[in-house]
Length: 261
Image 1 (tube, rainbow, N blue to C red):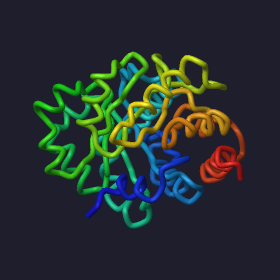
Image 2 (cartoon, rainbow, N blue to C red; image 1 turned 90 degrees about the horizontal axis):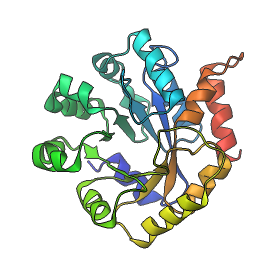
Image 3 (tube, helix red, strand yellow; image 1 turned 120 degrees about the vertical axis):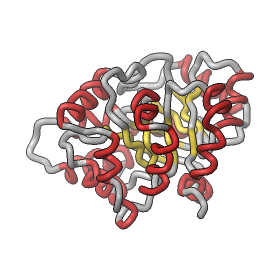
Image 4 (tube, helix red, strand yellow; image 1 turned 30 degrees about the horizontal axis):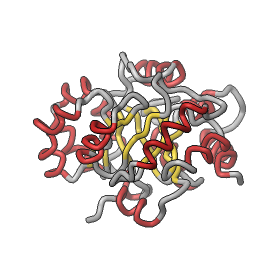
């Protein structure tokens, strides 16, 4: 079976919207509800964040959601149990995003096996070095049919970018800023220069821009330089707002604003 990530990018190469959510936030059992609502209201792909106590690359909004999810009792084993039947109702690509420590605690092969069995298409592990992945895990990922999408940052030189692109599968995560995640109101000039540099390299995989994509304006700007964008902190913040809307209504409202509907 063709990986759903390949199917997505095979059908479209522009304005792809990937949404990041933290598993177990705002409530322990909300993840499935959110996945179904995101699919219904126009998300092309969802990154499911595995909460971790020391999320170095995450800004305060996602850090707080991870803390809340851990306090709610979310653990990788619980998440995989929740996802057992997800492919009966959710058909868009699903990617797990998490840090290496919890994955290694589970065991890489067991983790990949459970990803395959629950219908996960790919993973993003920001602190897994490309050299370590190539030496120890690339064949294992291939055996289980799980894609590994790596991160490129403004400080990554061209030689390393090419190497990361050759090792990755599905898409490249183009980090928009050399800082932690977090919503920002606009795209700065130095970021545009970086995006132009990447576009000129004609990399073999499509790219999604993440970190700082916060509204329709920044989403569309990102889409002018890449195949789409990833939104995390802005979505997490919308889920945490104190109002009378249900989770489904919050998803509908947020997605409508980004999609311009």
